[in-house]
Amino acid sequence: MPQLTVRGIGEAVMASISKPLVEELARVCGCGTDNFTIDCLRVASVFGGQAAETYPFIEVAWFERGGEVRDRFAEALTRHVRQAGVAEVEIAFKVYKEDAYYINGKPCG
Image (tube, rainbow, N blue to C red; front, side, top):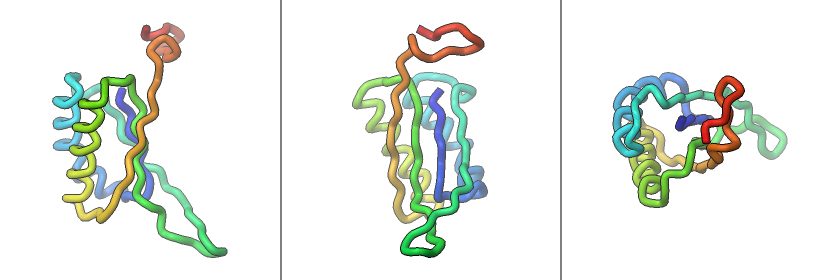
């Protein structure tokens, strides 16, 4: 945890930035790099009766770490993605409660 789910940004782009990105995000969160997952979804978007480009969007699922950490996380993530040539990106955070998150049948909190 955190888990990044990416759509509208190619796998090759995310792979090219994944190492430095995760290293920086781990520093921001104060956790190890092995806590992160990045999943790139292949999405077919439609608009106005035809196929359309999928807007770059990243959902971050995590345990809340506070506004300052969230702001720094979003800034770092945006910077890495934009430096890779993506003109715009939106990020949304989905917060899990530790007592409602289970690993192998055992609650984390």
